[in-house]
Image (cartoon, rainbow, N blue to C red):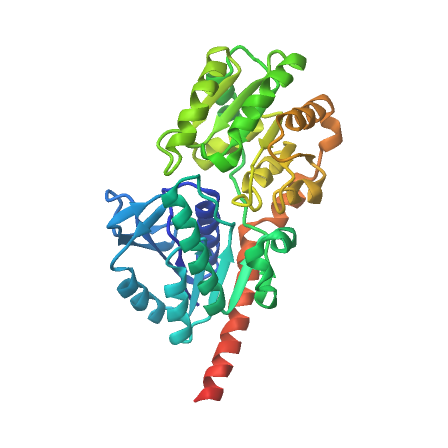
Length: 394
């Protein structure tokens, strides 16, 4: 099958959406499909076309950027060419340009599937409000034109105003999650580099430094944790400098985090490659996901941590709370409440034996090959349905 994947940002950009798309594209390619990713050339230093792990990546030039969105004047021409050359179109939303690509899927009778990752909620400001409304409208047009929609969990679907309107064409498929095993030498080297004095416990957070991630909530919870664990330390893995659209939030929280870093209770590890992420999780006592709104629909990092036997404290958000509920490996905290976040973290740190799960079973449930198989089944069914309608209309 020739599968066209379309999304605004792809690797080397890092977000939960791009990681999901990359893992699924690689797994589909490994299953013998021809996979092309059509994305933006958001950085002019990136090649217009390249092969990455068996996946062809085609990047469309960007004229200008508005907030996190991009303007690509030649996208329509490229999308027409790519849709005609493929059997199935797979769109990742939110994406401003998805409606135009979905329309081409309809016109050219190519089964078109949307994977809806999260609701859009940009930071305050006139431009961002305008972008929110525009993306919302375009995402609804894309949903109407698409043949089917995929989301991670029924919990998120039931609480999303967007998804509730399209229950008749909705399927839930758990996300693909994988990491290489942690090598003992990598685990030891990371511990020596970031914690040479052997402080602990270690609380991990893995995310972009973005407003919806709730870094400020963790910072406000930290003093209560230190009252009970005076040598506790937060390890923050992920981009924290030059995060697109988050300049104001960075200016707000980074000085506070730097103060805790000077006192030995916070470490910025930066963006880590997969093998280093495995070492990161293996050094943790607990992972925290204090997300604040529906731009977080699941939190793939929770599953990555659980695969390494690490419990999680997550916000009580639809979808985000599901990994803890599914596995029993952690606690759920009230959204945006530093006191309740501290309570949940202290509960896990005091009683780690209560939160042991089955990492191997989790690894199998979320394996990219298993997720790719579910998409493969959906794509094949839609090809039959769309082909049948095509014959009936001819």
